[in-house]
Structures are given as C-alpha cells and as structure tokens.
Amino acid sequence: MLTKLAMTGFKHRWRDYLVLFSGLIMSSAIFYMFEALATNQDFLKQNTSISMVGLIFQFGSVLLTIITLVYIGYANSFLLSMRKRDYGLFMLVGARKSKIGQLIWLETLLVGITATIVGILVGTALTVGVSQILINSLGLTLHHFAAWYTPAAIATLLLYVGLFLIAGLFNLLSLTKTPALKLLHSNDQPNRSQLKPARQLIEIVVGVISIAIGYWSMANLKILQLMGIGIALVTIVLGTYLLFNAIFVWLMVALKRFSFAQRGLNGFTLSQLSFRIRNYTKMLSIVAMLFALALGAITVGMGFHSQIPSMANINNAYDMGLVNASTAEKAQIAAMKPKTTATYHFKATKKVVYFQAAEFNRQPFTTIHTRNKNQLTFNTVHNNATKLQKSEDNYQLMQLQSGVMATATPVFLSKTAYAKLAQPEQRLTVFTTNNVIEHRVALNKLAKHHFHTTSPEQFGGRYAMYLMVNGMYSGLEFMGMFLGIAFLAMLASCLMFKILSGADADQHRYKMLDKVGTTRRQLNGAINKEIAVLFILPGIVGIVHVLFGLQMFKIIMVTSPYTGIWLPFLIFAGLYLLYYLITITIYRRIVLQ
Image (tube, rainbow, N blue to C red; front, side, top):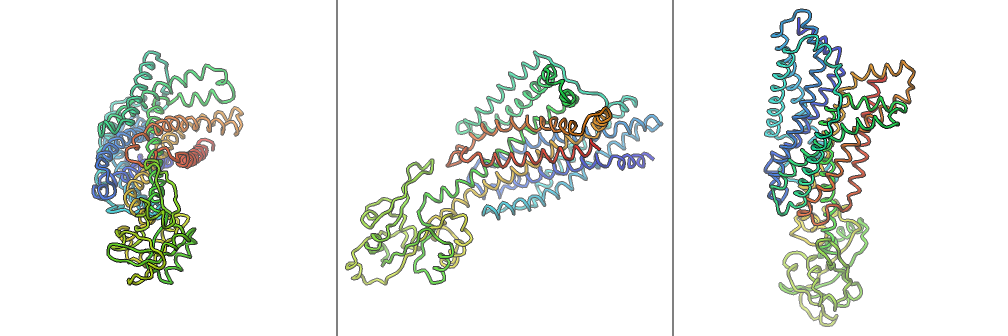
C-alpha cells in the first residue's frame, strides 16, 4: 500500500522529479568526464610533458568531489522537501515509522543509483561527442584517449552510490524522528537572513585573507610547486564561501532599507532572495568556483591553441621545401594559393650543398630572426646570396632540404663555377601559405605524397614545426577545452537545478500577485531580476578568480596567459547569457501558468 501511495506521489510531481533526475544525471556525467581524464595515467603521460599534471588532476578530483558532495546534498534536500508532506500524511493515517523508513531508504537509493548509471552512460556519450568535435575542429593529436574508461566509471559509481547511501540513512533518521505535523508544514518555514555584524565582519576579513593567500600561492607556483596548488585549493574555496555567506546576507538586508526597494516589485524580489538566503550562499559559492574553473580552463586551452601557430612561425618563413617536386605536387602547391613560391637549383655532396648565387639575388630567401623568444617576436630578413652565406640564420634554408642534406653546409657559387660541378642538378621548391593551420589537411596530403610520411623529423619548415608543437601541446589544449566545456555544463546544471527546484514552491506566490492585478510585464521583470542576481554574483567572483588564477600558467606557457583573453571571455559570456535565458524561460513556464 505504501509503495502504491509513493508511486501516486511520484506521478503527481513528475515535473519536480524530472528536474531532480536531470540534475543528478548531469552531475554524474560531468564527474565521469573529468575522471575519464584524471584516472587515465597513460593519457596524461603521453599527452603532456608536465610531470605534475597527474597530481594536479588529483587536486581537481578533490575539488570536484567537494562540489559533488554539496550538489548531492542539495539534491537530497530537494527530494526530502518533496516527500516530507507525503510522509507526514502517511504517519497521520497510521503507517508505521519502520515501514516509512524503509520506503525512504529505498527511494533515495533508487533515485541515486538510477541517475548515476544513466549519468555515466550520458557522460560517455558526451565524452565521445566533445572529444571528436575538439579533435576535428582544432586538429589535435592525442594518444591513449578513451571515451569509455572503466576505472572512471567505477570511481563515479562508488562515489555517488556511497553518498546516496549516507543520504538515505540521513533521510531515514530525519523523517522518522520528526513529528507528523512538523513534516506537513516544513516547506513553509523561511530561512530568514539576520545581520550579525561581528560575525559577518570576521567572515569578511578571514575570507579576504584566505583568497589573498590563494592568489599569492598561484602567482608563486614556481617557488611553491605542488604545495601552491593545495594551498590555493583550500584557501580560495574557503574564502569564496565566507565572502558569499557574509556579503550576500548583508546585501539582502541592506538593500531593503533603501527607497528603491519599495518601487514596483523590488521588495518582492528581495524577499524571494532572502527566503532561502542560506541555501543560496552555499550554491553560489560552488557556482563561482565552477565559473572560474570553466572560464579558466577554456581560456588556457585557447591560449595553448593560439600559441601553436606563433611557435611554428618563428621556426621558418616557409611552410615546406620539396626536392625535385613532381608536376602533381606543384599542382597541389598551386591549389593552396601560396603567398610566396621560389625554386632554387643545387648540386650536392654528402657534406656540402652548392647553390647558384644569381638565383638568390633574383629571388631573395627569407629568414626569421627572433628578437625575443619569450614573446615570440621576430623580424623577417630578405637575403641575397652574399647575406645568406654570412647569416647565422642560413640553417633555415637547409631545414627545407630532406635527408642527409639537411645537415650539410650551403655554398653559393657563380654560374660558371656551378656549371663545372659534376654532381647531378636538383631543384628545391619552397612556398609559404597565408596560414599553416588553415591548410594543414592539404599540407598533410602533400607531405605523405612527397616524403611518404607525416613525421616532422623527416622534413622542415613551418608545417613540420606546427606538427611538433601541436603534438606537444595537443594534450594540454584538449584538457583545457574539454574540462572547460564539462565544468560549464556542471555550472549550468547546479545553478539551473537550484533555481528550478524552488519554482514549484514559488508558483503560488506569483499566482497571488497575478490575482491582485500585477501585470505580466511586472512579473517577468521580477523573475528576470531575481535570477539575474543569482547569475551575476558568482560570475563576478569567478572572473576575479580567473584573472588571478592565470598566473599559474606563466611557468608552462611560452606566451603570456593573458594574450587574447578577450575572446574566451566573450565566448563564455555568450554561453552564460544563453544559460540565463534558458533558465528564466523554464522558470516562467512553471510559475506563470
């Protein structure tokens, strides 16, 4: 009988259960996506030369576990709030507490296990989709990456099932020891904010000091090494929570004292935020951390992506050099519409390559002379034969040769002296396209046709350097972009779940406003303002965290981690705005029926 009543309650509140299930599924899916990288040691070792990356991922796993713990706590609280009234009614009609306890335990465990299993499957599908999009669009080279990774699935299942076992036990003890009448009216009790100046001042001071220590440790990671990451993890998480807990409560109370709170529905909006203020502070702290992780990961990933062509460009002025190019290969070069094409004739021995000086006087050979290797700035120098013979950068000409000739010494002769050499004449064709990455597919095809390999050790030029640097940074670039997308999805899941989980309870309040003559435009405006506050506050904190957190990557990035920062920030702002619009649309449909 109790099971039948429970199923009836489930059918009646299927929309709330849908919000709960979708939130838990996304949470476990994102955790699996992260663990698919964090637990795959072969992938981490093969795709990055940074020895600390494994330990960094372990710290990341700890942080994500903390976030997951808070998230499941909210999910369980939401599940509990939906069932308190039902279980109170069961008690009033004479149901035994032991039976209700069993029902609570089984329901909590069933919800958790089902959502986790589905989440792991969704996470696998998301891993496949996101990885393929990144690999194909960015031209990445990865080794030992697997969308399905059994240790990651086991870690996800164990964590979530373990947490739900604890949650089920908590629910059993909480509900069976609570009087029936209190259960019936539990959802009507507000969590009102009260100003406690001394306590809040201490929280603000400790929070600011904690965050300052975290920022300092990230800026001095070269000195602190791994300990700096641990310090930042603890202090920034603690400081973020303390500041939200102190400042957000103070804001809600303080804003009600200003005259604008009496205009329109501003007072109602502030009261809505104050109603569940304590719960919001915890979730907003988590969202701020996820915001920083997502934006930071995407910014770093795009930073690695942007420095790859820069590093390729300082190696050589030409994309590739072909010795004795065939007619078909010349047609392939022409199809790429190169900016520069030149052909130089030469004769070679094992140690010396002889060129005609007159050809270099007619078609000067361009070399790259770096001014500052850290900033990747350089000059292009156009050399005739005389300059090139004396230049310390003439090795760039020999890079474009193949085989043993790449290490030979170039010598430039007059036409008469060149004609006297007995060696057979050969041709070196060099060319430059407008963008190596844009033409990487065509360059790859040309390399396979001419050199019978795409190994960059077998040929020189910008494309060979691009392959080498791309192989070096692909893993880091992929990790940044992949985790950024995952954290962004987790952020949206957390914030949307928290907001939508209270929508059903808010419905009657908006109905009351509608009955007293409030216009639909005013109601929409109140919703927009309320949800905007919940999006803007963690966004501001997250941006500040990212701006300081990028200091960590100065030790592993050739370019400044702040180079081109506006682009990922702009993209992220667009996605964040999209999540905001989706959230208010769903929220309106629930509360403004």
